[in-house]
Amino acid sequence: MVRACSSVDGKSKVYRELRLFSLKRKIEDAVQRTEKMAPTALQIEEAKWIKLDGLIRDYDLWDDPAKSYDVLVKLADMARAVDALRDLTYKAEEAKLITQLVEMDAINYALFEQAYTSSLDMSKFLDCYEMLKLLKGPYDVNGASMVIKAESNGNYHEKRRATNGGITSATVEFEFDYAYGCLQGERGVHRIISGSETGSTIDEVSLAAVDIIHLFRDSAPDLKISEEDLLILCPSSSPEVKVIEGWSGVVIQHVPTGFVVQSLGERSIFANKIKALNWLKAKLLIAARDVGVPSINGFKKENVFDVWRDKVRRYVLYPRKHVKDVRSGVEMPDLYSVLDGNIEPLIGAHIQMRLSNDMPP
Image 1 (spheres, helix red, strand yellow):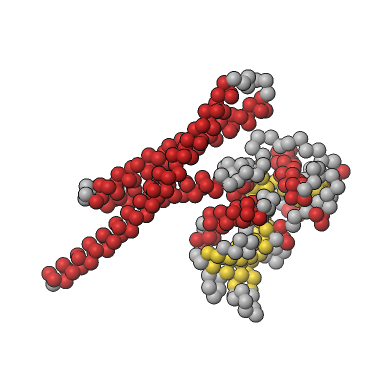
Image 2 (cartoon, one colour):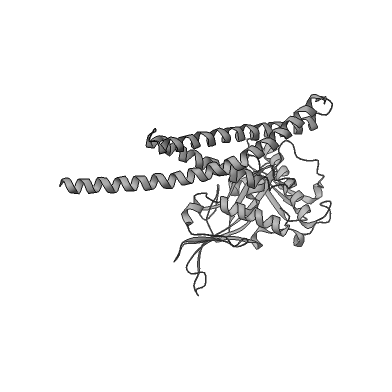
C-alpha cells in the first residue's frame, strides 16, 4: 500500500514538472517576443505622440474646432498605445523574474500560473498590435455596425421576428477603434451545413448574409443625396407599416443602388431617420470606393456589391466538424470555438490576403 502511494506521488511529481517545463517554455517565448518588439514599438509610438503633442501646443485649437477634434482623438489614441506598451514591458519583466525564481523553488505554483496568464495577454496584445498596423484604409479605424439577415427560408440570428416565427435579422454595433477594419472581411454569405462537402447530399441548416457598415467617429460627411432617390418608410408616413411589422423604426431605400437600411433602436422616429441616413451614407461611400468612382451619381444596381453573391465561410456540422473560410482557404477544426467568437485567425488571414492581393478594403 505504501509502495502504491509512493508510485502515485512520483507520477504526480513527474506530471507537475512536465507541466511546469511546458508553461516555462511558453512564458519564455512570449517574453522573448515582447523584449524584441515592445521597445521599438514603444519608441515609435512615443515619438509620434511627442511630435503631435508639440504641434498642438503651437496650434490654436479654437481656430478650427473640427480639425482640433480629430487631432485630439489621435493624441488620445497614441497615449493609450504608449501606456499599453509600457504596461506590456512591465508584464514581460515580471514574468521573466517569476520564471527565474521558479528554478530556485522560491515561489509557489499559483504565481507561476499568473505569469503564464500574463504571457498569454502579451502574445494576444502583440498579435493585435501587429494586425492593426496593417489596417491603413481611410475607414479602418472606425467602429462598425454588423447587419445579419437570414435567407428567406432561414431563421438564424436576429432581433426582428419573422412573421412565420423565428428571427430574420439582427444589427450589432461595435464602437471600439478599428472595428470596421477588422470585421469587414465578414461581409458576405455564411453557411452552416450538415453533411459532406463533397457528398451527394448537403442539408443546409442555415444561410445568413452579413453586411458591415462603418460608423463615423464624430459626424457624417456632407454627402449630398437627392431626395428623389430615397424611399423612406416610417409609421408617421406609412401607418400600414406599423400595423404589419409592429415597430416604430425607419427604413430607407436608395433607389438607384437598391441599398436598404433600417434603424429601430432609437427612441424617436427622427433619431432613427438620422441614424439610417448615416448608415446609408457610409454604404454609399464604400460602394463608390469599390467601384472606383468619385461620386455616387450614376450608380447602378449591377455595379454595387451584393452580400448575397459573395461566399465567405462554411460551418460544417457533420461528419467532420470544422470551419472553412472560402476566401483565404483557412480551415479551423474547432467549430464551436469559432461559433463562440474565436475568429481572430480568420480576421488576420483576410487582412493579409487583402494586402497581398491589393484588394479594396
